[in-house]
Image 1 (cartoon, rainbow, N blue to C red):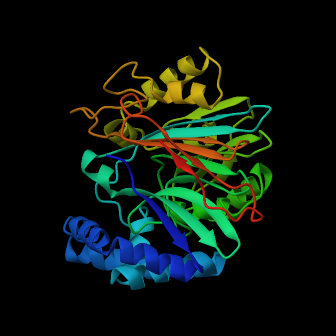
Image 2 (cartoon, rainbow, N blue to C red):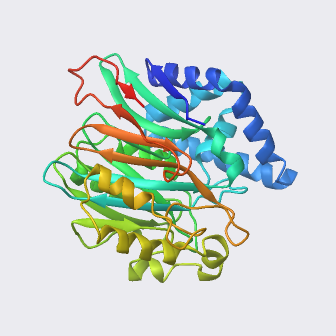
Amino acid sequence: MEMPIVVLAGTPYERGVAHGTRFREEISTILDRDFRLLSDHELSQARVRATATFKAIRTVSPHVADELLGIAEGSGRTVPEIVLRSGFELFSPLNDTGCSAIAVKTKSGAIVGQNWDALPFKHADLAVFLHFSDKGLMFAIVASFGALGVAGMNNRGVAIVNNDLILGGARDGIPSQVVRRLVLETQDVKSAAHTLSSLQHMGGRSYLIGDRTGDIAAVEVSAKSGANFLPPGDVLVHTNHALLPVTSSEEDTKSLLGIYPSSAARLAALQAAVACGNLDADGVKQVLRDESGAPDAVCKTASANEPTETAFSIVMDCGRGEIHVVAGKPSVSAYRRIIIPRSFDDQERPDVNS
């Protein structure tokens, strides 16, 4: 089943209202489903934290706060509930979302991609959202209904993907989905890295970013040590375990092995696959189709050992301004192409091709 492609236009608040209205029933179903997994006390505490977090979001990004307000208005839910949709650090029932990610430096621009794995019943909760202001397309992002987004690219050719890390410790700060949206406001990898370094992160996560000049970077963030950048390279890959000593020292190894037992194997498979071919956009697609070691592979199948499965795959060609996305496993379905206009000067809406 293909993901819907949804156009959101206007001010941040208007785009939020349109999002919430379009998926009003689905958002309520998801929230009610997840809330049933918490006790009354746990839910009350989550709402209190979400209220405080919304104030922090308002401080660093008023327009993201306005969009959240709009989603709440359109969906008929409260603002704290909508904050919880984008704040898995605050509220994470059944939040197993493993990922296998890659960023490649090329002379014609970076190629950034990932397979996003989730529990199968969550696969139908996704859409591609195209965000337009009065000046044109700003960015495209894959997001769950009612949430801010998973992975995407802006009209300046900056792309971001990410992976969950299981690190000890948490703190008040900015949720990861807000962080991703702030990166999509930047001009290039350098400014994106500055943004990532300046924020107070709630918990563990890795980000891979690239831009149209071909620059790429990988960073692991934690509540304790902040943003820590991996050594530069022509190809960067990441799964769900920490690669740097500073973040590895913070890792909850027992929980990691319980939630993402395939992480090390998927990383090894990525490293082997990238050594075997030309890493243009089509080459990265081939890497993400890899089923070596199935079911716990880069292109993942649900199993008793690890019940997540690839929900979508995305490959972003920053130089060409193209996003290639497929719902489900890329080994069995074809990518769709979305062309992103390169600047606000191009007023046309993107072409979508099978």
